[in-house]
Length: 86
Image (cartoon, one colour):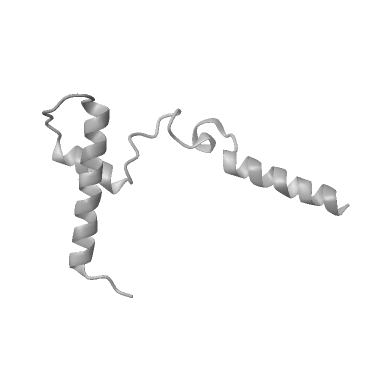
């Protein structure tokens, strides 16, 4: 099903409002008046409201070469199945 440009504009506006609320919580906690940069809001909305990609927030594979939690659980369940089968 093809989406119209009006639908995409509406979804983009919703994403920008969500990003704006999220940025207000992070940048100005507890303050009533805030002045957010529209470029920062747009950037935040385009990247699914991820505040950063530092080593604490980002993917462990990218920063440390470690496997992710999901991969560890998958590997453990796979090994358990193999042990049960043999």
